[in-house]
Image 1 (cartoon, rainbow, N blue to C red):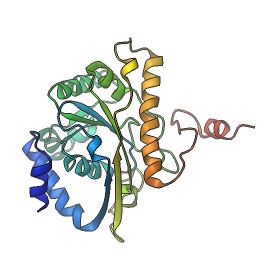
Image 2 (cartoon, one colour):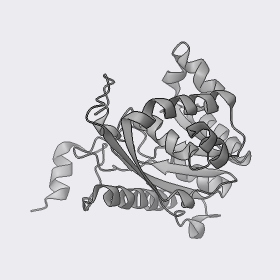
Image 3 (cartoon, rainbow, N blue to C red):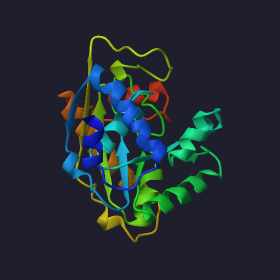
Image 4 (cartoon, one colour):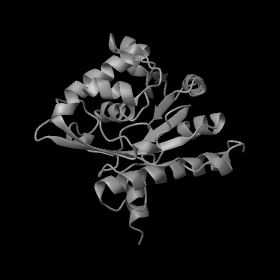
Length: 254
């Protein structure tokens, strides 16, 4: 029944390996999790799009992939290049059309080029603007990086923010460990409307423009996460580039 629903909802072309694994994930995750999915109508059903989301767990890419596939879009992630060097895993990622990112190197520009090409082919490119699992002690979205806005401003495609919460209960933190599946976890995801970037399109990609656009994206994601958590987000986003002392002083000025 779930596979028939997937074919009915998601009609865009997709890599056969990706489609197969999405179905397998549905069989595995469906019976052992509750799904609180919202805002799926905000995801454009055709055309290139950048989807940006918060990163809370090593398990959340699987959760987000399910949400996007059953919302009508096949996910194509910008993923760490080191994953592609793992035997079997790398071949599967390549067959699924995922995009390797060589961090802190000139090869990172290649990832942007491949992402641009995917957007031009009408695909959905998924980016975690934080670049890694959040280091915020309470798992709020932290300071973002500019990769997503560079692609969005260059291609002119829409940017759709997604907030997610719940995957951290399955696998907490950055270490990979056996998942905690009981009691049954609730996976909450919500997509918002397109991030407003029209006033920045066509302008030179100065540091100021990149910071402004990135902050807008992170503000939208954070608001969605706050909605899912039913809590108020902190006024100051965690910045991993600052020392813990600097963070504390900024959050608690004398």
